[in-house]
Image (cartoon, rainbow, N blue to C red):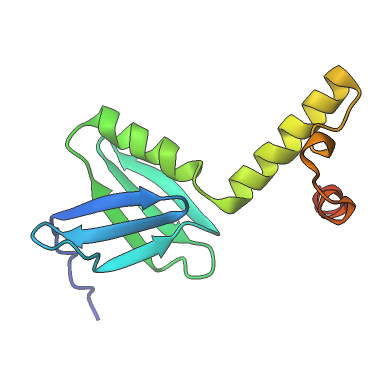
Length: 124
């Protein structure tokens, strides 16, 4: 069967931590949200990007921005929004600070041994 062409709909979007909420332009409550985990953010055309999910690659959401600059800003913000990205960043900066100072920067904030162990063992 031929696929029905996608219909372009005007939506407002709002990024909150790792959720991308989308709204109808005339409503205050979101009509849906995408959890930005295990997903791929791709710049498709100069002002179009897509979000697809590793578990469901056939499910793809395309977004068209007003300008290429706006599109690039969204792509970068969405790529930095996932928990996995934040966790990797924390581990990287923690190791860099430890190399420079010889001290674990998390110790001064009372991070438990267990939490530090989890961070260390999840490194790949």
